[in-house]
Image 1 (cartoon, rainbow, N blue to C red):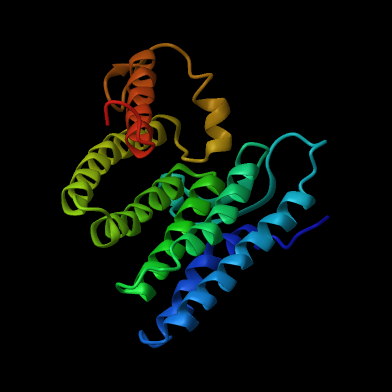
Image 2: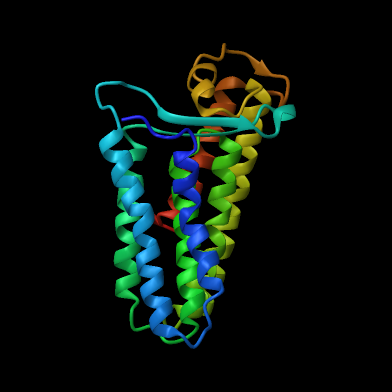
Length: 240
């Protein structure tokens, strides 16, 4: 089944559009806010189901790709697509979001902002799973930090202030290493496109990278460690 070229972009930003719609609902209309948030959260779910049944499992590689100009001067483009790994992650995200909204049905404090932040977080996660450019990937990675911080700080448990502060510090520390690794990879290869990097980065000849003055093996090792630490913090994984 053929889908519009912009289908993945619409899927990514549909929860964010839902959050904008909720912004115009009066704060005291609690029942409307809850029901509207739940109904709007079903839109990405329906779209991900369409994507699931439209995906051609007999064809390897990325499908339904969209690529547009962005920071061409540094070799970065807006590039999104889906493959057999990201597809179930997208579906799982769109299934869990309505369930999480239902689980939060009894929240009373700043209900509208809770729902808006949760929908914004869904957009960030979808963008993360569908990105095929490391700069776009990093942007969605950082966007997801904002709603998570406020969700923990405002609606968390007894130690929510400490937990949110610790979450912010740890995540920002991991993100700095992640950003540095992404920049080095882009400068070393001339591209941030993940599809191209799958070939260029893996097959880089041994030697010293003039950009950083380190050997290729060392740079690859440092990049792996930086990515691993950033992901371990986000999971979170011991000892983070």
